[in-house]
Length: 281
Image 1 (tube, one colour):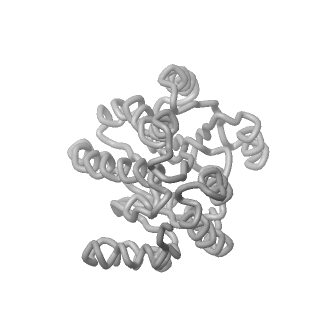
Image 2 (cartoon, helix red, strand yellow):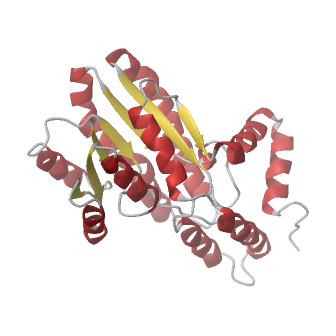
C-alpha cells in the first residue's frame, strides 16, 4: 500500500479522507496546523495514522516536516494538497494583505508541498499528486472572487504539471467538489456579512448572494462524497485528470458556464445567485 501525505487533515474532506485511507490499509500521514484535531484522528483510527503539524504557508515548517517524515518512511507515494480556506467579499474591498494571505495558503502552499516531495517521485519515476480544487475553479461566482482566483490558479498549475510530469510516470489529479458540508459555508457567509452592512456599496447584492448561499449549503453533500472520489484517485491504476463531486449536481453547471457564450453564462450566474435585476440607487 502506498504512503499518502495529506494536508489540511484536521477537519472536513481532509479528515474524512485520512480516516478512509487508513481503514483501507494505506499508510497515512495526516497533517494540519491544529495538532489537537490531528490527535483525534489518531484516536479514531486506533493509531493507524501518523500525524504531523505543517503550516503550508511556511517553507521552514514544510522543510521540518519533510525531515521528520524521512525518519519513519522511505518515501511519499501520494501527495494530497487539501489545505485551503475561503476568503469572500467584493474584490474592490478586499485588501492586498488578505488577498496575498489567501494565495499563500491556497496556491503557494500546494506548490511548497509539491516542490518538496516531487523530486523523490521524479527520481523513482512514480507518484501521484492530487490537488483539491473546487467547482469554482472552473466557474467564478460574484463576491467569491478571492477564493475563485486561487482555485483557478490551482487548476492551471495542475494542468501544466500533469503534462510536465507524465514522462516521469507521475499522475496529477484535480478533485473539484461543489458545496460540501464542512463548515466552509459559515466561513464564507461571515466574510460576506463583513461587507454587507446597511449603507455599504454592495449591501443589496451581498444580501442576495447570502440568501443564495444559505439555500445552497443545507443541501450540500457530505464530506464522504468527496473523500470517496479522492480514495478512488489514490487507488485506481489510471485516474482521470478531473473528478467533479457530486458529479450530477455540478458537472452540468460547469459545462453550461464553459460552453455557453459569456453573456449567456453571466445571465445564468446572475439568475442562480439572485443578482439578476438588481440595480444601484
